[in-house]
Amino acid sequence: MKNLELATFGAGCFWCTEAMFQDLKGVEKCVSGYMGGHVDDPTYKAVCTGTTGHAEVIQIHFDPSILTYETLLEALWYAHDPTQLNRQGNDVGTQYRSAIYYHNEAQKTAAIAAKTAAAPRFKQTIVTEITAADTFYPAEDYHTDYFNLHGENPYCSAVVGPKVKKFRTKFAEQLKA
Image (cartoon, rainbow, N blue to C red; front, side):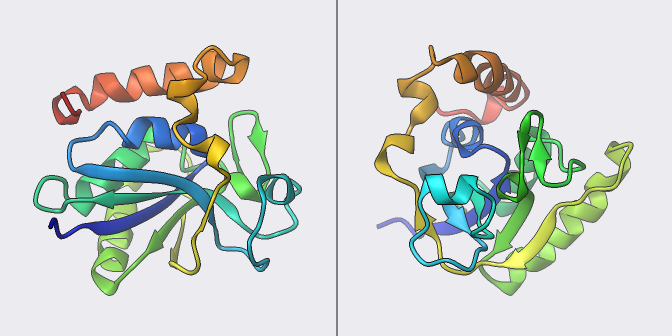
């Protein structure tokens, strides 16, 4: 049995984020969900109101012998704009905030170091919150693998598709066959 670790990131719409990270070598599973709020068992509809306190996140189950947490952090900086507060593009609200939810002290240390190292690449201040992981609530089943199943959806065509294409080009060497 593989010794998998968890990484949990908020980077805007989880359809986008899942579609990018699930293709990296070493990612065994990528689950869309919610974290960081004050309501138990939140639903997509409730989270979209912005009143539950949750962020849309992906929880990545990865094999650290193939893919390091530091590489995942590097991919995170590339996958979204960490300088946009409570939004990504036209997706606006606290549920779309940039966040790293660490699962242990080593991840916390790595996240802080990665944020500091990434800062000079951006013209504006990185607003990504770095917070201890709390309860993860998986999103409803219809969100699973959404982009791959619904790529013709107008939002997927206009927003997700271009982001995924750019990500796959940048990380071509690290993608699954």
